[in-house]
Length: 448
Image (cartoon, rainbow, N blue to C red; front, top):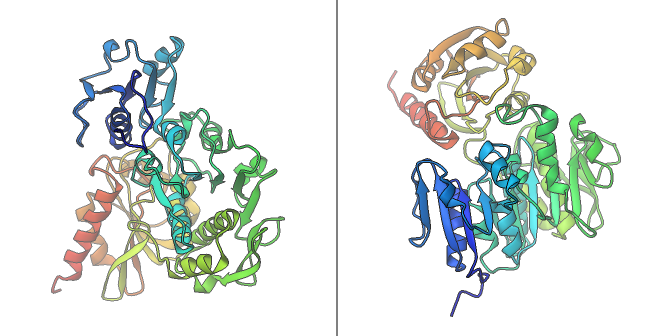
């Protein structure tokens, strides 16, 4: 007898493009459901694949797509690539793993997208749901493929972090609650303009129908056209928002809760950007019907995710903070807003995502006392931020941490906030953050 939580896809053939975590998860799900599956990539998968999945490695051979019923596209493969456009021109249906998960899930999806704050917001929302006794799961861009959690046979809400890459390949995907936090320049190597990037993000609302809830920031001017008919949140007052800050309190005006909820000073998270994340998560929770007690408990207790601003050590009055996840200029600007004038020794740089760094000039000029640039983008950073503060070319993270430890003064924060991807020197942002932590702890324990 088959697994009752799986669909019966016997007799169907799928090709999955991309053997990363998302692609392997999609291929494995389809194989367990009885489909014939071909997985194609230039390189071998880094994780175990169901033995019945046929592998096409070293490229995307035409034979991988012969006679298939549907193609599942991994988010790392651009939809406008010649490969995908060729398949579409042949009339081949091409969907993403998120669409596949939505089709076969019994769980309602609560989706969150945006350039910055996605992981924090979805984790807050998931924690609120669990605190309310819901059978809630969490997946998507945060690290666990959506199909692994959404298609487990459960019926409670599934909180999904969604990237623009994932949203490019939805077709009918319709989250019960959809939230767009913000849009700042990012992935400029993939999108020709901010408008194109925003259009990909805005697809989260594309198929929402009656009874669904949309949530949009009222603080981001790029999102103004998307606020009509949707619940708004703002860290400022007014704006006819459903969630805002007034007199130092987070306030809500929803069908399930209206009034002041919790003081900003009592939040477990710090920084103006995190106030927005708390407002968005609380608004989504109330839209789902979570009682205020569960929302307040979570907002007070939750202190943040790894690699998103955590202080990993103190040494001689200097704090060392890991924000390796700050991989674009918008994220770094928002992080620096939480620091005082000339209070930061900043380590930045890595692999390019396209675009420059001049957007950082106001915040770097105010908050950063000394800038250490590393990686492939070091020269571009130094050029774009020239004159804002003293700049040194450290080259590697190891050299930068040693230099930062030597020049930091009591009261300073040595902050890793790269404004770049990590792939020049590291496997991913987690690897970069873990390396930073290890280097900092080595210096913190040194007898000097």
